[in-house]
Length: 181
Ligand SMILES: Cc1cn([C@H]2C[C@H](O)[C@@H](COP(=O)(O)OP(=O)(O)O[C@H]3O[C@H](C)C(=O)[C@H](O)[C@H]3O)O2)c(=O)[nH]c1=O
Image (cartoon, rainbow, N blue to C red; front, side, top):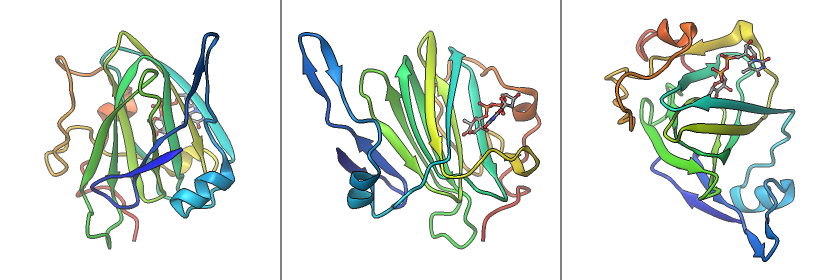
């Protein structure tokens, strides 16, 4: 497992050791001890999620203002452009984002700590997205920030307008959103 830093120090790219042979491949998608050794974060995930989306679906930018969730995200079919936005008011990178392609092919994962909004857009025909979270889903605490907020300025690799949930169509701007301290 290799850890690659990003423009925001707390957001990390994880590249697993992939063992291939004539049958196919094997890799450890999560190993708590190894993850803690390499990232300095001893995480206790409590929930696994799995979503499937078609091309141009954009899910995000989401976070929970209470019971915030750290997320370890990856793609097991297709490809997405995945984005984390720092919404910690006291952070020097407040409002900044990190975006990269996660795919079944590159097997890259992204570690997104608590304090970030998260989203992705599907760039393949379909994509299956798996992620582990450090706290439970709490819909009463869920918040959405607009994917196209110019104050964040994410350069989404989009063909036309994205397909959004009603919740995401009604998302607030970064300026109006509730932030972390
Ligand atoms: C997140 C979640 C949702 N649900 C139910 C609620 C809805 O009936 C259905 C779809 O939920 P939603 O439209 O909020 O799903 P996404 O738009 O994929 O939301 C996620 O998208 C971005 C990318 C994230 O990072 C968050 O984990 C999460 O907000 O699943 C659950 O039962 N448990 C859950 O943990």
